Amino acid sequence: MRCCPAYAWVELADDGSYGGDAASALASVGIIGRSGDQFGASARFARIELLMRDEDFELLCEKLESLVLGSS
Image 1 (cartoon, helix red, strand yellow):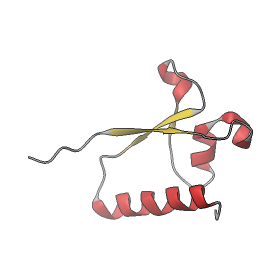
Image 2 (cartoon, one colour; image 1 turned 135 degrees about the vertical axis):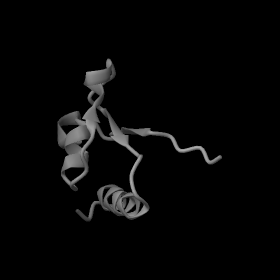
Image 3 (cartoon, helix red, strand yellow; image 1 turned 90 degrees about the vertical axis):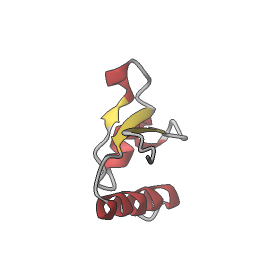
Image 4 (cartoon, helix red, strand yellow; image 1 turned 45 degrees about the vertical axis):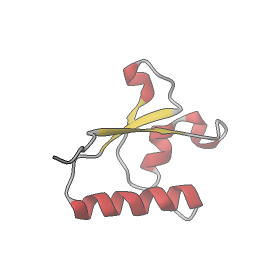
């Protein structure tokens, strides 16, 4: 049996960018994430769902990479 976590938490490293809102940062590259403040955490965190088809997961990884590298 393979372990497949359902969600990942993403933290916005720079408080000054995207108004300190990780969900907004994700949205800027087309990723839907739920703000951490919906779960009692700071908006610097966002939760993303990981249960998806392999093709969609690859696209998610590409979008995250573009966000991190700043080439959105």
